[in-house]
Image 1 (tube, rainbow, N blue to C red):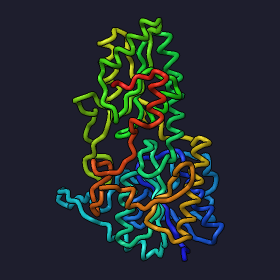
Image 2 (image 1 turned 90 degrees about the horizontal axis):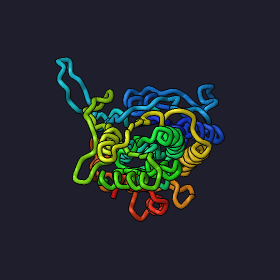
Image 3 (image 1 turned 45 degrees about the vertical axis):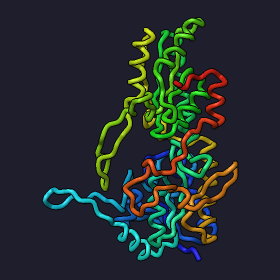
Image 4 (image 1 turned 180 degrees about the vertical axis):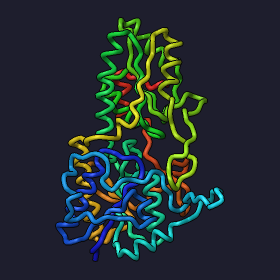
Length: 379
């Protein structure tokens, strides 16, 4: 019987985290269950730093609040944790047993993990080691396997669409190519959907390596038609044919090593299109604007549904699962299905070639719709 549960958030913040937390807490309160939150995600789990959330003032007013009231860890892998020795040398240690011990000592019957691919990979691994985990799919990239949509995605698309609307007026006024770089390391959902909703002319996504000459031809065709301007949306993970994505290495936080970060795809496209077409091209990188701020009405409802469902699953004793939306209905799947071929216990992170991330497929209706309305996808 579930009496005490805890929540942790891992990865980048998205609009909708607090509504999920709120829904879990309120459902727990309705059923006499104590609810706690680990501070700063897996860092809090490792350090056993948590706060009580049920019947607490800190859990009030969360439905429209961005960010996470319990913080988040960024790419913290407790199975491969960076430790700096007294002599300055660095080693990586598996500290997952400490997490298991903490949960057992605290008598938590379930830990809810709010996060994306890497987060749920660690949740699966901790479940194997004896911790009851239930995942909730969080990422603006919309690339968590086995679910139709993740919370935070709708808000990100809405923000990107507003940016396209604003860039369109500048492009038309000054006869320019305006490039908008949006998030999407491996999956182009944000770029594709915002391009459609914002009326962009070109969308370049990771799943379709682009030929820059094809994009230039689409712009030149618009010029011939009396439209000497264009709006281009580029995923941060977009790459040219026979080329690579624009990346750099960065040390991004405690407990992590050097991580590959994506940046510069939009600038590269803008420079190349300016050279090929003769039109002035400028790039705007939307960056963290997509992740922060107030969640959309859609994400508030979706997050509430996900949080309530997660708590229901805990009360039913269904652990080692991820809450999902399938064919428009709430459901759940095994975390084993979510990790796909990334089965190795304690693998450094998700986002590898073995990960089961949800990518845009060429038979997806969004791809067909984009082509139908004349959006060039660079192929």
